[in-house]
Amino acid sequence: MSDRDKLTNSEQVRQGLLGATEFPSATAAVRARPEVVAAGKAAERREDTAKRGGHRRLTSRTWFIIVGGAIIPVLVLSIWQFVTTTGIASTSQIPSPAMVWEAAVDLAQRGLLWQYIAISTQRVIIGFLIGAALGLFLGAVVGLSRFADILLAPTLGAIRAVPSLAWVPLLILWFKIGEESKIILITIGAFFPVYTTVAAALRHVDRHLVEAGRAFGLRGVKLFTTVQLPAVVPSVISGLRLALAQAWLFLVAAELIAASMGLGFLLSDSGNNGRIDRIFLAIILLAVLGKLTDSIVGLFERWANKKWA
Image 1 (cartoon, helix red, strand yellow):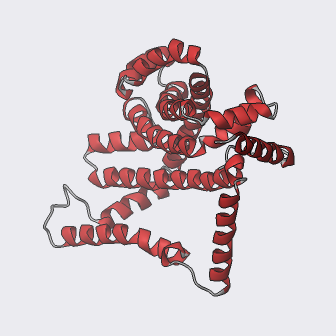
Image 2: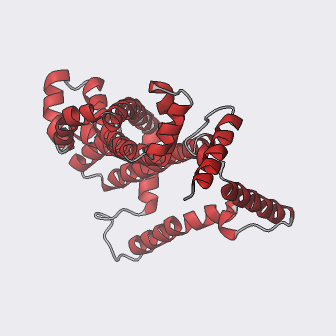
C-alpha cells in the first residue's frame, strides 16, 4: 500500500470517528463501512417493497409458526391416544391422556396443582436470576483478565464437573431442607452455563473494536457495557438459555430428595405411590413450564439484539 493510500485511509478513519457522536455498540464500526450501509439500505428497501406488496415468506408468518410448532405435539398426542385406547400398551405403564387430564383436575380441585407449579417456578426464577448474575460477573472477570483466568478458571472448572446430586447431601447438612438448600442448588446449575459462555466469548472479542472504544475514551465498566458486552450478546443469550434449562434440571434434583411441595416432589411422591398418571402429568408440566420460560428469554433475546447487536 502506498503512503498516499495510507494517508487517505487514515483520513477516512478520522472523519468517521469525528463524525460519530457516540459509540453505541460493537458493530457501529462495521455498520459505518459504505458497502455495509449500502447493503443494509438495499435490504430495507426490499423488505419495505415486500411488505407493501403483501408478500412475506411463509416461514415468517405467525400462523405458520404456530401451526408448524404444534404439528409434532399433536402427532405425539394422537399416537399416545391410539396406543392406549387400542390396548397396545397397558395403562399401568402408559396412562391415557384422559387419565392424565383427570389427575390434573383432581389436583387442581384440591388446590395442590397450582401450588406445586407456583413454588417450583418461584424456586427456578430466583435461582436462575442469582446464578445468571454471578455467572455474568465472574465470566466477565475471567474473560477480561488474564490474571483472573489463571487464578479462578481451574477451580471453577473443577467445581463445574461435580454432578448435581453430589451437592444435595452437603446442602441438606448445611442448610437443612428449607428453601435455601434448593435455591443454592439451582443457582449452581444456572451459574456455570452463563459463566462458561461469557468467559469464552469475551476472550475472542475483536481487539480492533476494543481499541476503537478506548480511542473514544471508554474505560472499565463503560468499555465493557458499550463495546465488549454487545459484541458477545448472542453468546450471552445462549448461555442464559442453557442456564434456564439447567435450572429446571437442578430443581428436580433438589425436589426429588428434599421437598414437600413442588413438581419434583410430585414426581417422587407419585413414584412411591405408583401413580403413573401423576408422573406423566409432572413431566408434561415441567416441559411446558420450561418452554414458556425459554420463550421469555427469547423475547429478551430479540430486545437485546435490537438494542445492542
